[in-house]
Picture 1 (cartoon, one colour):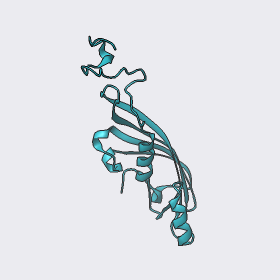
Picture 2 (cartoon, helix red, strand yellow):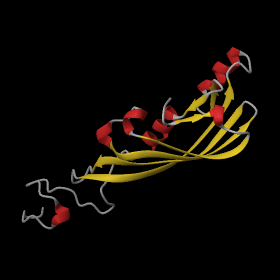
Picture 3 (cartoon, one colour):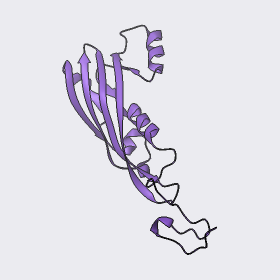
Length: 157
């Protein structure tokens, strides 16, 4: 069983807080792109065969600044919502149609694996143009010195 899956068999009816933790490899994320554990903190509500999961996924991404090429850690905290019904409770065609929607899932009654959803929300949250800080001055185009460390001595212009 995945460490980023909810054990539905031991889950009681009603609302239950659930904490999950996994490393990048378990979520099919590049290990060198994430530092430390990836954590999920969820409120899981079980009503019959229906399960709703609401909470947050937190991690630290290791990125490279586009301005100065410095590696830095970027904390990421994203909401995650998943609604799941037990497979076989509806028509197979309807289930296939609903599962294509990123909002609805189906479970087998034993576990609800959240690895795919967690991976997706983390990747979507990463900046397209990562910067180590808002006022990053970048590298000098002439000598390649990091302008964040001070002037390089090259003539302006």
